Image (tube, rainbow, N blue to C red):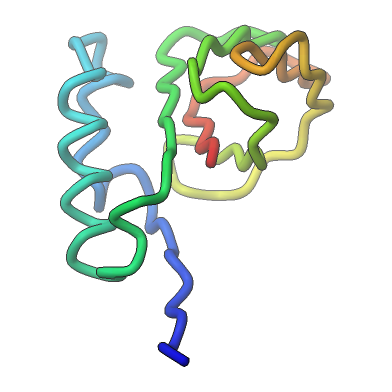
Length: 111
């Protein structure tokens, strides 16, 4: 039986995702940074499907179209990497809405 090493995600700046919060296009940067982190930290995770949503504008409700075809776990962090807790509503197997008590910026990791 092979050993499983969990994937941990450091703060957004460590992953190189700060560009999203600076108003720049982040989708490609996010995919590349997360893919590099996953492959380096956990070779068994290469088959895992995941999605990173960057939310550069402060909103109290984030709509995330992830196209994973499943109901993934959702973790949200602010731009300094601190966990944020919101209500997660699964609209479909490809869309989730995350609601917060106030407008916030940050990232949602789905997988």
